[in-house]
Amino acid sequence: MLMKTEFFSALLNRALDPSDVHLPIDAAAEADLKALLSEEGSYVYLTIRDELNAETVKCSISAGTLVLERGVEGTQGVRHPYGACVSTVSPTVMAVVKDLICHYDCCEDGDCTAVPVTLHSVNAPAASRGASWQGSVELDGSDPITLDASAAPSWMTVRRYGHLVLMKGTPSSAGNVSFTLYAVNLNGTETASAQIAFTVS
Image (cartoon, rainbow, N blue to C red; front, side, top):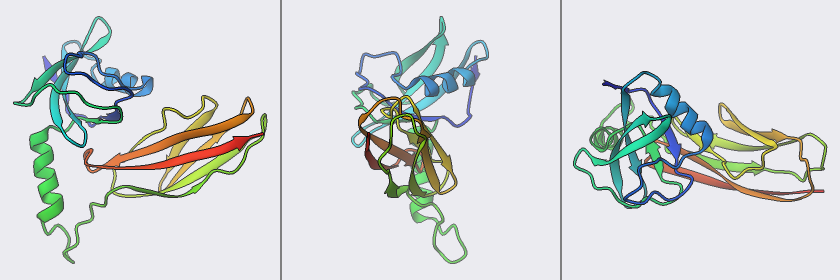
């Protein structure tokens, strides 16, 4: 058996109940995790965190499917809500990292450079069916930052370019578009969101 330690982060796209053994994440995140576990017999420890709980799980692939061993490293298998953060940092390591972020004088001037993620300056103009559209959101915070906009329309791509998140595409039908852009950093301890809404005529 080979333990993987590469960084992985995603958000649950539905609630995870205590008895669930399959990880509910979007298809792109699932593909990334499967690629990480591509070697025969490999596994990874993941931390699932929400506002109330943190649980460590062991994740591997069985018959082409991601399978979880729940409640390891002394944690309990609990219910995690939609949007809970999944990452490859265990609660023990996370506690040490958080302590360093909050208490260690890590910079010469005494100010630590770890900055919680924020989303601001949303620009989502009206769109026209069949015409190219672009919107944006400004982003600040320490890397790595994970973005999720899983409820965005299928015609739209969402990409980060430094401190700017660009949303692009060509609407295929008229109507109202509304979704939430989420950003997570500091090993899943900080989350920001921005509501995106506009009309396609």
